Image 1 (tube, rainbow, N blue to C red):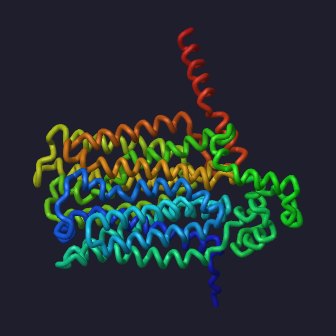
Image 2 (image 1 turned 120 degrees about the horizontal axis):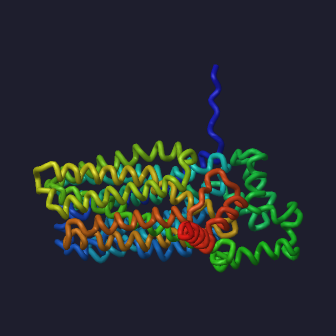
Image 3 (image 1 turned 45 degrees about the vertical axis):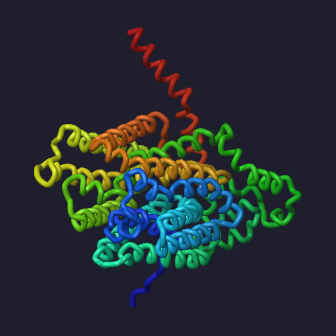
Length: 494
């Protein structure tokens, strides 16, 4: 008889935690199709492209603001409780959207939803990163991104199914389902064990050791983690009960000052790079594609709402499919190469689409140009999921030392939310004023990011904290500039 062994508890905890990604993905997949439904327009009236952008993006500024405080909330309450609180607020906002009687009520619901989203989303990766052994960190921290793409599929196809309902239920039902899922996830996340690293930072060493045992992380792996992350500030559990000791005092002081430490000399470069990469991740135009996929497909020639919705759902399935190998091989591909080559590829695709529109090659419902645009949109979304969608979020979390990881990751996610807001707000306006301007803008941002990362982004795959710190010292701006000057001077002399 073959015995079946369950995966270690840290794997199960990571999978449960990652279900928060479904909420974010489903909301992203729902809002675009909902706002072009006939029943939605009948309920709230026709709006301009500017107001359309404001409705879609109204979730993002509250998310950006709350994400700046998410690290502090997670540091005070602990990672699971911080996630649970954010998911609960998100569920309340979605319920308000589902029951909205006026457009203003709908927008308020999106703002509340955004507050919750900002609180929990960044903390997902932080928590998984903290409970995972280094050898499993890449695939496990990629799991939320996989479930985000699953949420996209669910969102698009729920809307595709509900669009046939001849009442306001057609646009209310997706938000009602989203609210139920969010409240269920909020309750379930309370069963997650606390982060052992969070416990260690509070001097609760005995509890941390017990939690590592519960999670099933081996003694060899946890010792490697603790030495690399510098967590063993307190040598034994007895010192944890005496906050008067110098080690305990320093630990508490560091915890209180973690916000200021984001810009201390040893971590400043990592903080700025993470914020830059997370912001530029959105300026690639990915959420312009995801939020407004039905609109983009209509512009390319799929004029019926059913056809554009179906095409959007197919794109979500394609994104989900390619995210699976991206998750499996996250550590094999490396962060640096996937970011640089991915950025170049994304830029080329955007330039291609923009050139097709600028040259008047796309002709309504006929011609090869429109099919080339449709295929290019699919390729863009798939390449993003294979490269930037997985690698950048992992990189932004893993390059931070333990003492600033939650705060620095929250700051980076705040940058992501702000850039997301700009994309969601301006995309319909750009598409209304020019068929090609948005594509050239997003393509330029992608190539710029690839160039910056080629200069300043060291590889972190499989490296310890000390190796990461040394890598950032070698790639500091002044040293890079000095090397460039030396190369130029040598060539000039020749």
